[in-house]
Image (cartoon, rainbow, N blue to C red; front, side, top):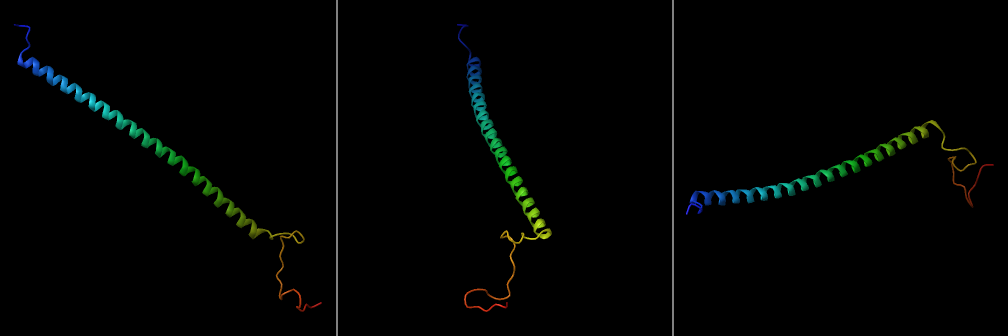
Length: 101
C-alpha cells in the first residue's frame, strides 16, 4: 500500500495544479493587457503623426499669409490695364450723372 499517495502528496499535487492554472490565467490576462497597450500606443503614434501634419500645414499657411502681407505692403496691387489696378472715384459714374470734362 505504499503506492497510494499520502494526504500531503495529494494536497501538494492539487495546490500545484491550482497554482499552475492560476499562472496560465495570469499569463493570458497579461498578454491581453499587452495587446491593448500596444493598440493604445499605436493610436497615439497615429495622432502624433496627424497632429504634426496639421501643425506643418498651419505653419505653411501662416508663412504664406505673412509673405502675401509683405508683398502687398511692398508692391502695388496691380498694373494699370491688367484689371488689378483700381482707381478711387470721387463721384458716381453712370447714366444720368454729371462728369467734369
